[in-house]
Image 1 (cartoon, helix red, strand yellow):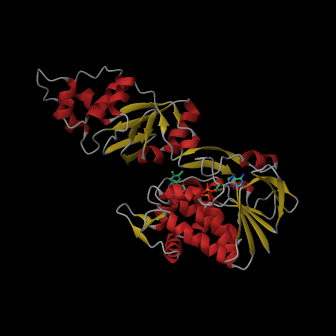
Image 2 (cartoon, helix red, strand yellow; image 1 turned 135 degrees about the vertical axis):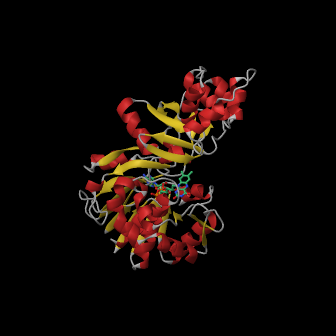
Image 3 (cartoon, rainbow, N blue to C red; image 1 turned 90 degrees about the vertical axis):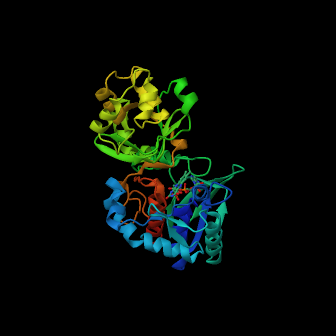
Length: 392
Ligand SMILES: Cc1cc2nc3c(=O)[nH]c(=O)nc-3n(C[C@H](O)[C@H](O)[C@H](O)COP(=O)(O)OP(=O)(O)OC[C@H]3O[C@@H](n4cnc5c(N)ncnc54)[C@H](O)[C@@H]3O)c2cc1C
């Protein structure tokens, strides 16, 4: 059997490997001149391949998409992924947070060995071909010189990635092509992305790039601890990424979203109010807040939230420090997000990830409608769905 894989990221390459290992003829095409560029980018921050937490908790990270992804994640689970990486010479270790990385903490060695192995298996790589749509029994592509090529195969796997970081991966233009072909796609949006906040110039001048260390961020009853970072146009960082789905929901309902930041999550409201009662007559607000354990960046955040009108009493001040409201005007643009929410709807594919409207065409990776936090969950699901599509 002959198969064409469109998109040479982790999902597409894993589909290629699975098909080639089963003895099929495989061609991988990609619009770029080289393959796996998003993986290389992920390697710059250590290449967090998967996570070692208990498998049931692991599955929960996929939220509403857990039921659809579960069989794929079970068939190619974190242990299988680690064995696969080990085999490629990228022996893995578990970091202190339970995240799993290759020892080299970068993607280049793994990708080099993987690529060579695929070539040895007979996989044919065709870089510089952009997929533009379907033809009978195949795909239509355009080369860099504008020439059109039709490639035919018994099976096609689409693994075009999401819409983030278009400089290295996909740009989401496949949504239009698939919709025109009658395939339902959920609107793409930024996931694991920063948010936009209108900071005052004073706050930015003093604190751009500064983390709010050991803070707790809440929205709609969900709380995540970590270090949100003040950026030029808003906030970035783990807790913001994790709360992304709830922030997006509020933005969708009200056009603005409000998160609350607890600057001292290990101190109770009463405990903080008592600390704040010891104001000396000559103390400025900043001095006495600092003495109570609040860092200058936190004090500035409190000033931002109140238009520089801090509460006059210790109880009010403690309440503010325990829940500083931050008004979010928008998610950061999808181009700057780590991953993408939305994509090919689950109702558009069958259990083998085959498009119902296009038999013989399967979909894998981030272009499917799921999202997950950072922590290795993204690459794991891309590799698991790639293996599943290949096996199917
Ligand atoms: C900065 C950054 C850091 C990250 N770090 C991590 C991490 O540490 N751990 C983790 O789990 N995840 C991480 N991710 C996410 C992870 O890299 C992605 O989820 C994953 O690469 C998606 O794999 P994919 O195969 O679905 O798509 P991609 O890797 O995006 O690959 C899609 C491929 O399709 C090609 N393509 C797109 N459109 C066309 C077309 N029309 N014709 C031909 N080819 C096309 C693209 O050129 C690309 O090569 C990170 C992402 C970013 C941006």
